[in-house]
Length: 216
Length: 231
Ligand SMILES: Nc1ncnc2c1ncn2[C@@H]1O[C@H](COP(=O)(O)OP(=O)(O)O)[C@@H](O)[C@H]1O
Ligand SMILES: [Mg+2]
Image (tube, rainbow over all chains, first blue to last red; front, side):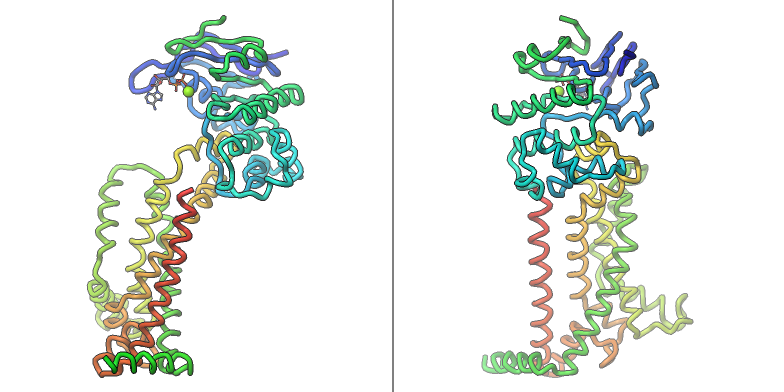
């Protein structure tokens, strides 16, 4: 199976400081990779680069064999990132979850969005019509994940997605992410301080330290 | 004190009985101010959006100029439009002096900096996570632009309402380039100014009440919008 991601000699620099330095990294479809490490070690930076939200100052990245390029909409549309406090659009829950489908001109948005809501443990009946300001933190986070699951991503990048959540919501997030891997062979890259979670689901856990990767 | 109470009663009478002179001024005001706010929005939102969205050399200077124009006195705008549309002026051939289009030009100049400045701040104060969200859900450039505008809709509406409040209550422009012609260019504010001088208090009070009502509605809308933009 060809790799989904191939990174070579990646370096990222912020304010003249090297914050990321990765010689080599490969991610395969359906793989679950954990990233852990202290605050400021570069985990979020690596995820943003994988999400094509920013480009490294040096190095090469291939996604599905093609050089990564944020203007390559077709590739970018297979990747999605969820952070610890995501932004919801000022519209209904259904509007949020179906937004990615709408961008892609996919039909059957409503049904697909409702299915994605069910995946994260939110009853579509109850939540589809809620507005963005009518949600608790845990519900908002799950809506945000549903919006990303709705587009059936090839790569799902989760940056401390359960950081601010209670155990119930966190468990919903964790199981929905696994479901995507089983169902669509999505590659999962997880940043978390929840070592038990990483230990139980990841095939590989990469330790980050001062911008560098150390396999463990 | 009595004449104030008396004036109030007469004013209510004028309004309830649909006094034609009173309603002519109200109708003129609504027509011309609606045209002016629409023109301000159409001309002001695109540059306001660019000003808030992009950084470029001289951006700060442009902001200072726009902010200065916010406090442009209406008599100065009146003077400016007067010289533009009077017979010797560059627009003299159209014979616009003392017409509604002349008032409209002036009021558009009044509303424009408000719309531009508030649109720019609306875009600047959009959540910083929005671009990343749009990108990670797969928006192309055009979709990003459209959704960004839609996300700032409450602030844009608030900008429109604020500008409208300024336009509907101004008196300098309407007086100077409208000429306060009865049944034609006489607006609520110019009518109040003139008729109060003549001692027709009831008429002035009636129109003043209408203006207050408009102000009340405007603030009601702004209040609701403020709540929406804060979540
Ligand atoms: N916008 C920025 N400007 C300058 N330095 C930054 C910026 N964002 C992050 N950094 C720095 O980059 C390093 C890596 O940050 P980050 O990837 O967020 O780490 P982590 O997610 O592992 O906590 C940190 O030292 C942080 O201070
Ligand atoms: Mg981080």
